[in-house]
Length: 160
Image (cartoon, rainbow, N blue to C red):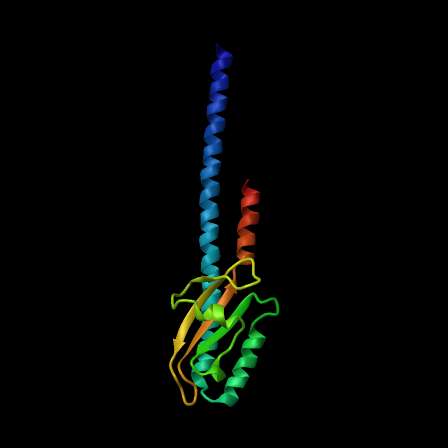
């Protein structure tokens, strides 16, 4: 009889500990997910504001060519950060995959899956009013979500 009570108590304790660890793991996984999204948004917002400042100041084709070179330089070679500029005037457009970007709604924080990519890009956009020769443009900044998804998968594997 004594063994049976001991075995039941051990089993009950083990079950409580398992549930407690599962709840703590779930909460930590959720917190990590929210922090990674916040980090992505902060990075997107920083890139958007920096590029917006540059676009706001220049409105002629000569400076536009310099801005395109700047966007080429700021976008890493691995394509983890991308810039697109939509405009009615093709001389003031910028970016690869413009057809997919053109279909993107004006909502911010949207995900966009480009052809040939496994994971979507998280995007942030801003409307920039016309200045001098430059018409109104829409600046879109995209950040590849793969590194963040990989971090979450690694964390989940460690929790399990």
